[in-house]
Image 1 (cartoon, rainbow, N blue to C red):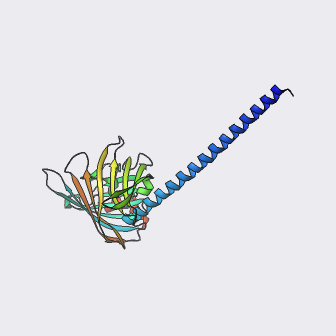
Image 2 (cartoon, helix red, strand yellow):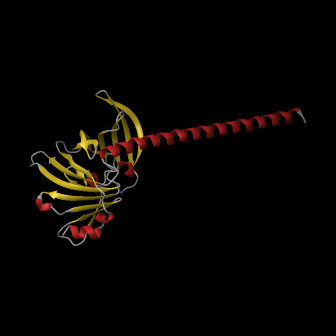
Image 3 (cartoon, one colour):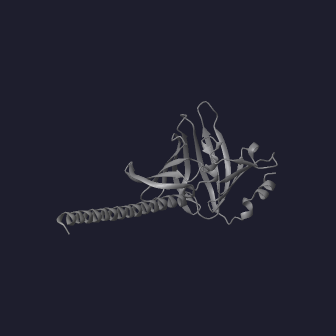
Length: 265
């Protein structure tokens, strides 16, 4: 073999091994990055699930909610609802006050929502994002299951008044959920929810919610007050106050359209 051919062979061999090593290093880097991302995603999901369990039980329950809405130059509006929920994907919302609206019922199964009205023979299909009252959307009462509706990502840890919070970005799993994106502050020490910012598809901030007054409710310490403030129109807010939560063994038949047609008459 000539010296020239030997040199070419050595050069090609060197290039081959260089390419091989680069490929291997890239593969290892990608695998490590994927593992890190998986671990980070799992951690974010666990944080979100813990906060969900603090807000509401996993098992069937009943709770009464009073919503007081205040707006500039308008009378205070007070509405009362009874919520029956089972397994985070079946919820019934009954209007109990004011008397003129008593008998109105919302039924949520998975992400399908229907309204049953006493004067209508057939239920009406509604989006979760539609306004229920004040700053409260249908989905705020009918489906408060963040872990089931959003993909969480841990953005950062942030200190507010000396307290550390995990800040999660929640991205909607599809177009059927209540909000396109939520930024969610969760206490790093005890997993209690602190604040949530709710965003539209355009990326515009719609409203901000603050979880307050943690007290014994349904056998656990939970937020009994949620203040939702309109971020687009100053001075408009709704306060949700939760009381009389009890764990209940709820039959599946309660969450059927045939049953609620009879109930809403």
